[in-house]
Image (cartoon, rainbow, N blue to C red; front, side, top):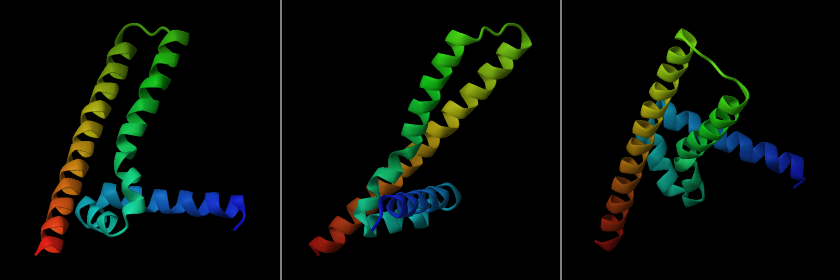
Length: 108
């Protein structure tokens, strides 16, 4: 398989699974347990937060904002942080539950 085609395939699978985690996390997490190669996708919200913070620090270094704009930006960033952390916690909780459940089923 050519590198371009493989990159497009990986991007498609990653985006499809990430969309599934956003829309219906329960069913998609169950599918991820069946295909362990997809485990890193569960940690995509943390990767997005890391990228978000790095971009924010670079932007804060380059641009100074004061007044009402600063408060709006702070509200947006804090809302994004809290919602992404809660989404990541939900995904980790579901992943842990499914791993324990599959481990108990295999043991019996």
